[in-house]
Image 1 (tube, rainbow, N blue to C red):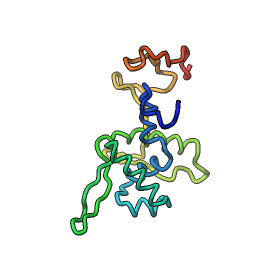
Image 2: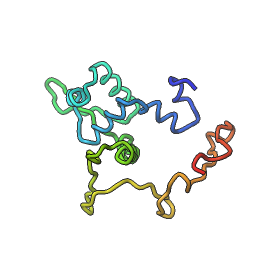
Image 3: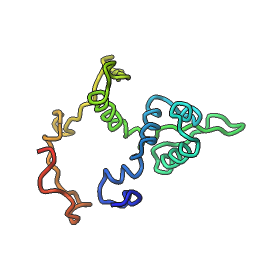
Length: 162
């Protein structure tokens, strides 16, 4: 499987990585969820070259993850905002942050706390079953081929979480 052909794979994760599977793209998305919207703010916070930043933002806009919204008319200036498609990445970003807090934090602990607006409590993301509401971990799921993989023979016989 070649990196530039990920978007053609019959795998949702591979297709997702074709859009957001780059360290700079993930950091741009992190900053979007922190409220950063303008090109120069991204550039300053990330220390990324203008060319690389422009390419990553363009890709996110082309794939509908971000949208450009004018905040000034003369001259026209635009900022980047998360679309509905982009907002749908929030659980994935939260899960990566939680993993980092658990496995990569130093003695100072988590650098950012996520507070649930409704109850005011510091929260951690939990994956739950959409049908019964019970927490779900890797060992609680069995994977079956869907219609896109039915004839591909790409699933291993034994799940990794066993």
